[in-house]
Length: 198
Ligand code: 5GP
Image (tube, rainbow, N blue to C red; front, top):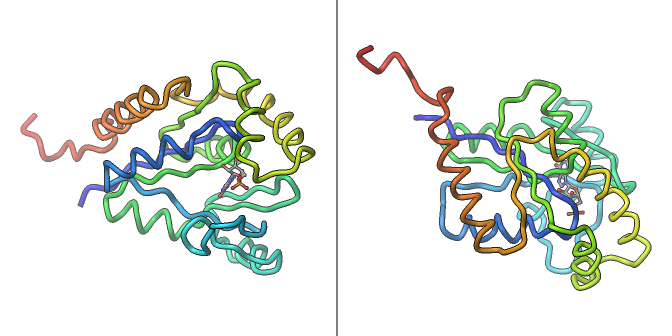
């Protein structure tokens, strides 16, 4: 079976990247969002194994020791990591696998030479992020300010990615993401060229 594509998908907190991907996944059952591991506590409504694998520091660093992560970072005093097994299993099933990860993790993958389609989601104006984070109501004001200062650094790294999605209109951003997914299925590295009579 043809392997799926790997997508590295980042953007600052509150930009709406999760919402765009949720919409895509409703329409395209071949798209899979990898479930990361984290040491932070679940927010109301978050389910272990669905939104994240919630781990203690000890469990997390035990997995690090066993080389079970494709990448991991420590940020906001919390560790986050992408589990190799989750990604590899789904790619070999032919799924298009999205890693919704922070910029540090994405750049680590890129410099390690991991072949993926790197997508950055950005707002038109950074002030929109503050409004969205306050509206979401899941973080204290102090945490929001901390996230915003990281966001401005993250935005400065957008140029390291392959594609830019400006989320000023949800439907437009979703259409653009669908186009990227479609085009990625035609990447020459995904073809078995020996099949053709050339
Ligand atoms: P949150 O705590 O809001 O769920 O996520 C905080 C940040 O961690 C987000 O930017 C999210 O994309 C990032 N993140 C989530 N999982 C991973 C992961 O496995 N690796 C990396 N590098 N970042 C992650």
